Image 1 (cartoon, rainbow, N blue to C red):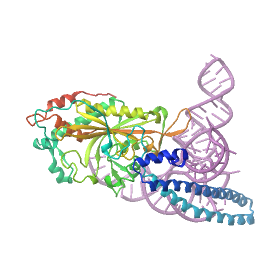
Image 2: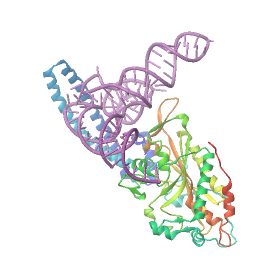
Image 3: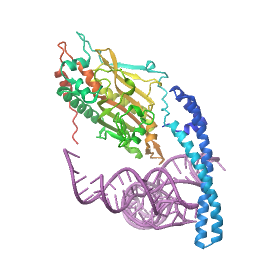
Image 4: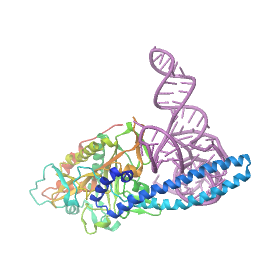
Length: 427
RNA sequence: GGAGGAGUGGCUGAGUGGUCGAAAGCGGCGGUCUCGAAAACCGCUCUACCUGUCUCAGGUAGCGUAGGUUCGAAUCCUACCUCCUCCGCCA
């Protein structure tokens, strides 16, 4: 959530409003919000003045009672009853204003950082660099779902039988590959200073609010109404919310966390898109990286985080590019995002495999994650960041395409050789 | 799932309607003493928001959460959540 103080303060208001417009927030909402904030202040002042009167009166009444001054007691009590009525009159009005403010503020996206290009859509994203070598095939490479099906590696039909479209079943080779890949990625990140957590795959609504999924994007997630729980769309949600309503000491930061979890997405708006294969599915495994840091470090930590995600792609010798998202394509909570996209040799498409974002204090404010500044003793919001490190399903899709042989087989020897590099860390 | 008990400041723990943001202790910070340290002693130690003459002053709110009763609630009432104990079930 944005710092509403920035909208109340005349010095910062103009700039913030401008940034929000560039992200496509409608003008009416902004105007209404600014006006309602002003009204709320006025009403609050009235209310607090009355409450003050009430508190002082109640104190005097207590004194009268103790001293047995019945007449004065009743006289003042009648006056206080009037004050009470006045308070009861203002209270609901204030509540209404606050609801209005929340409704708008909760749906406002984050502002974005100066180096983010201003743009409307994906078209305006900027390719930062292209890495690795473009794979060179002496034959026409097949798409991953074709090889997987032909070699009996993935059972798409039975996935559909069990759960419907966009579900799948891995047979033994891919099951083992995924298991090893996840272990490999985790160990690489642990080596890089990340601390592994095993977290719930079902979280409550307040977690979903904290990281910015709720309330605006409720339809994109699986929800179990009976228990008020939601299947996590990414481990970002539980990992970030681990520290909700907590205050770090400055020495504890930066804190790096990682977790491998399944991710569940309804893909409600994606009918007919990427219907074949592992690219767009309702459930997939992903290793996630999350960072908490002090505000002045988040730009630097963002770059380091990007490198950590890239390490995986480099290790498997994939051809990929780093894309900087434009203002219009940024996720709701993000202030700056790099996407890592792998080149897919069969379709000649770039496939997003990691999204590396800096949220500044946007999530921290929603989830109330703070730290105590040592020199001033003041509490401030931390900055949160996260990256996929990386999505296992899409990585497998890429590996199947990159490591296919002219004979229509998979070069398991080479894959296993790459997986052999151990990242062992004995506690 | 059933029965009982409990949720108070960083922690322990008092408070069952009237100067209670809340005793006391521990921890933490600062100071006195000391060559230094310990001990002892003194002081300070929660958060959010509002207003202003905005590194300071005043005010409002907060005792699991949300409501309610009252002139006045940590204290009474209702619902929910969490934890503990016992029973049942179970990987």
